[in-house]
Amino acid sequence: MSDSCCQVQIDAGALEARQRRVLIFVLAINAVTFFMMITAASLSGSSSLLSGALDNFGDAVTYALSLAVIGATCAAKARVALFKLRHCGGCGCSNSMADIQHGNPNL
Image (cartoon, one colour):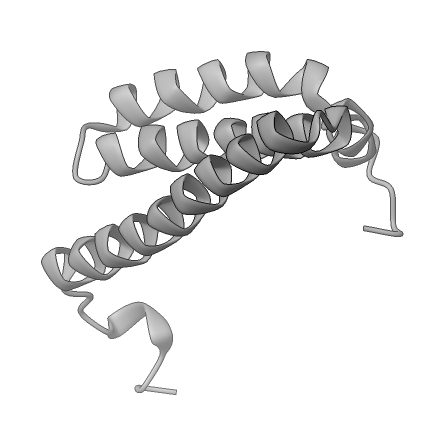
């Protein structure tokens, strides 16, 4: 049992760099999708496309906030996590949060 996972050194700098790359990638995808959907919604007058675009914008904000706190202090990460939790409740996440809080086994 000497090769336990707890004895492995983790390179925090490499982990943060990887997290940064992934978040930039998904943020770029969301931003491009947002602008495409806004354009399509304005050309077609579709409120459904506009709703989808706003959802993508919300996702992009979440990714940007996560990107901003990579390598930050635990306190800064906690503040951003609480901010996202408070503002996610009205965006369809309230049922998921209730499931997590009450230990729903179907997650």
